[in-house]
Image (cartoon, rainbow, N blue to C red; front, side, top):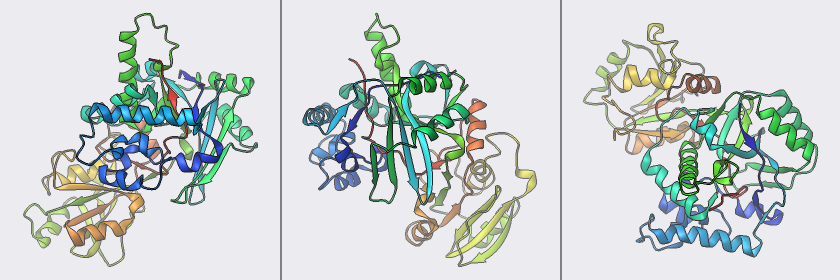
Length: 413
């Protein structure tokens, strides 16, 4: 059963929520983050990426950078930019993109559930990426970016969510990218109790996005347990900030592939070689967006092709049967020589939010061939996690992204 508890969120004041809310820290590189915060002093990106407050020559991982994040957060709390609720609550967070809405419950999840795999993951993390967020959480003594979780639909939770949304939200704004954000506070004792009880009937939670944030929050919590030998499990560092969505409301977008070279193949020999494992159909100028599993678009030499994998190359295995695995095992590795897409410099990845035009653009600039993918389904993600397996890198791209700064979970020192 899942241990999902209410908490006293630190939230932006209603008048400032739109100015505070920011895309996650890892959406930007250093230069992009520095440019993004210009003219936006209240954007939470200033705190999430505190190196933006320093000259570009400053080591972005220096101790003073993390201390700056703490200083800014504490000042904005003191100045009233943020306020903390007086009682433990749950919160609803609705995001609407292109007319489609998804509503999650914002809460705190036990790090023991992460330890014992009640919270299940589908991808690996890298220690060097974890370290930055570990230091940020530890120095600020706060979790500032929620982990994006999903769960199999629970009718009681669905009923409560619908009922709460009949009331007016405390935050309601449209971000500059056109995504609408609405927040409700659930502070009724009966509703809070019902939500907590309903989650105990949920067998598993799944990380949709935020594997590095989850791992970092877990490691900070375990570190504080070691330095607080009298801990009893109720301290806030035993929990991490999350927004939990029912599976049927989530949308996974395609995560497309770009390759720099043909690994020595001529165009004609390359097309002949891949026809061993795929049906290759010439399309022409019209971009190919795959319409079903086992189908891929390919852009090569300013022309589009539709590839369909031969039936004998498919698999019922939860990982090997993924389209990203099929392309990797039957084309990227044996033909283009990309053995490890995590480290190979011959491949890059482009989220579907950028559109297929981005693939064409990059092939006109510095890439040779691009592959458009059919999106991984949420059911495939759950099956991989339930099997205790990991997906290949860059298998899922979730939109819309949760904003940072709308909810902050303060942990005790």
